[in-house]
Image (tube, rainbow, N blue to C red; front, side, top):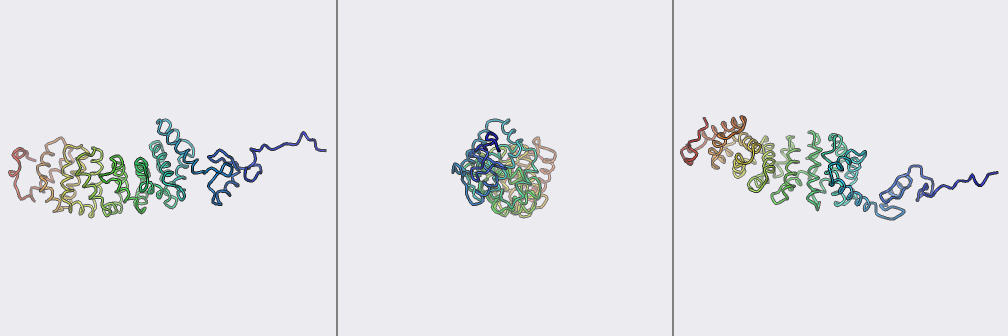
Amino acid sequence: MVRDDLYITVPSFFRCPISLDVMKSPVSLCTGVTYDRSSIQRWLDNGNNTCPATMDMEDGRRMDSLTGIVYFAEESEENREFLAKSDGFVPMLVGLLNDNVDSGVEFLEKVVSALDLILNKIENREQLKRSMLKSHDNCLDSLLLVLKQGSSTNSKIGSARILKFIAVDTESKIMIAEKDGVVSELLKSIAPEEDPALIENGLSCLAAISTPKRNKFKVVHLGAIKTLSRLLSGSNWSVSVTEKVLKLLETVSSTKEGRSEICEDPSCVAAILQKVLKVSSVATEHAVTILWCVCCLFREQKAQEAMIMANGMTKILLLMQSNCSPAVRQMSAELLKILRVNSKYCLSCYDTKTTHIMPF
């Protein structure tokens, strides 16, 4: 005979709301309702995107959660470090970027913002690169979508920063540059009419991914030289932006295609020459290296003529009298020699205020 007091009633919260059976592998949705893993998986696999118990949209809950995470990360360095070191947090963000088929741009912007905020706290850069680039380009699709259609400048900056962060080697740089649309969108982001912060981060990303030869060619082919020339011709840019423009120009000047584009545009050569003085030592070194590359190393006649027309001899003479580095001084001396050989005018034709400056 079975005693009534041995009968045990299973509490309702142990039962799956879908199958009504005791849960073997409970999982909770963002709505706070817990289901047996197999039951909720079947529900989602059948094309549903709501919580069965509350009928709330899961994406809406995910958006709210991400918004809270972004606010939390923005509050302090400690919060950002906590998130970056929390088990599973970074992989979760990567998973959300990877699962972008049905996600809207607004949702992806939140994911990008959250990941961007903790980038500097992520210790294993190589691991993040592998996880983002291993799965059929989906993460790159998401970052590209934010660059193209994002409503927030900060999210576009975040996409550029993430791309730069995962460009850790030649393989990753080539994968990023060969993704259709990425280089084009990055070039659009550095147009002079864009936000200065977006321009600076776009330049940083382009410089990072442009070191492989095939990537340099692609950047040049898509019209980078004209955009960079327009940026250099402006007078209101920060020192940092000017340095990054010159760095990217120096990178592409190592290719035949890059040199050809630079030399075909006298205004580009003149703009580079204008930055050899009164910007920064970094800008000076980049500018002189570009001019030395096209005029001395590869003897581009059009570049030499453009420098002479832009009063290059005077500027190089002045530079040599400044407190420049030995490398810059050596390149300047070689530039001056080749300009003097090709110039139709002697030094005495220049302003008398500078004729006393001699290179030797």
